[in-house]
Amino acid sequence: MTTRIRWGPIGLLQVPNLLSGMSNGVVTIAVPWLVLDRTGSVAAAGLVAAVSALPGIVAAPLSGWAVDHFGRRIVSIISDLLSAVSVAAIPIVAFFTELNLAWIIGLAMLGAVFDPAGYTARKALIPDVAEASHMSVTRLNGIHEGVFSVGWVIGPLVGSLLIATLGAVSAFWVPFVLFLISALLIVFLHVGDAGQDAKAAREEAGEEHPSAWQNAVLGVKIIWNDHALRALIIAVTILGSIYLPTEAVLLPAHFIAIDQPQSLGLVLAALSAGTIIGAFGYGWLSQRVSRLNIARAVLVATIVFYLPIALLPPLPLMVVAGFAIGLAWGPMQPLMNTVVQRRVEPDAQGRVYGIQTSLFYALPPVFMLATGVIAERTGVMPVLLGLWVLMTIVAIGVLMVKSIHDIDA
Image (tube, one colour):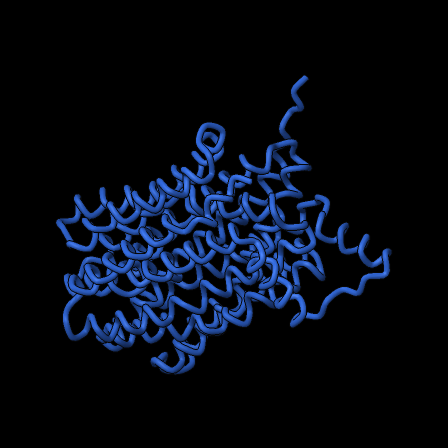
């Protein structure tokens, strides 16, 4: 007899997941627009995007330690509350004084301190919620990433509409409210915590819980010693880092130049819409295709569909290309979650997610800063084409690495 799925715990995790995606979608479009509106400089937008990501390099491993040490729910709640304060600080500061570039950089960096913890905690909660709801972890992985992407569809649209009607500063009140609601919903989520159970078992056996620094080192060792996991994380981190300036710097610069904020929202929404379908489809796909072949298809399709975006075609073609690249990349994050859950002990998953997130914070600032500076001198299209060449080289290199073949083990 098939056990009936309990949708209550799933909803209490996925609604905050949705709200987080929406909040980040609004902030992602509002911050560069705010900078470009005040400075008119693409390089300044790249600088803000790059510098604001730096706190995450340190915050992400600490977030992984906090999730493993204090528990998944409590870290998610506290992180959302602090994120709400950080986004509200932008309109509050703007009310009392001039919101110049220095203020924007400082407040963006403050927000980046808290984001990794909530993201890591909600991801770590997936196995606990899957067990409480009688749903397979693989299926819930796809749902979780798909729902987060739904937020990224709604977020940029809401952000662009708010910018067009109320202005970029007032747009930040929306994520403030959404983060508060997210924290409240997680309060009502009552599920087990496999990480805390494993931690308690180790403590009863006389093992000491590692410090934050030791936790980070152990996370690095786990990833480094698992060759398949290491290859997949490196591939996703490098490709994501090369791609990120497209959404964070280059496309905003392109649409700012032609004064079309709504068009930027449509393209980013199309990217996310494709990601939704790809992520939601992962559960179905994983039952029919090996994880290795999913990874291969993602890498090939991503570089194929990025080229039309790099050529900056008319809006309808750019929206279609954006949807296609999102569809191609969609299964990758659920695949990453599945690999970590299958290969890493429950009380170590937080540290692995933390290191993974830290890596993603470390590399993109280099590309965002460089693309902003270069685009100001050469224009947006040459930089986009250069990024496509880099992505192609990396994707081909990853496909030739033998260790990635073991992800099906």
